[in-house]
Image (cartoon, rainbow, N blue to C red; front, side, top):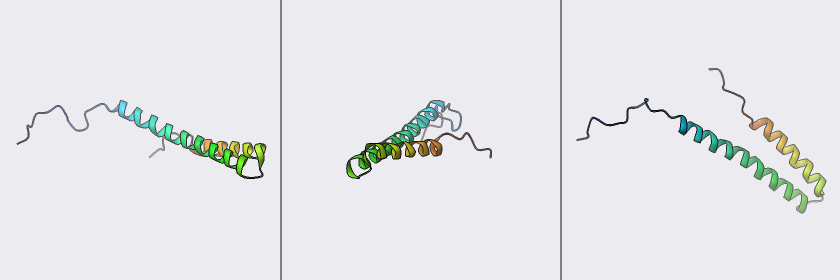
Length: 79
């Protein structure tokens, strides 16, 4: 039979480190994905189309601006 005395008590542990790690990983994933998407767009337009360097750069900057606008932290929603 399981021992009834153990160190873990549900809901009593400090989870601030786990929360900080989760937030860091999600932030790195979010911003890293935007960076990879912008790089792929920029390289694809520059080398695979007639847009050239300037057209590819403008499109990548627009993507980055839209990504920053939509991916930024908006604060906690009031529930």
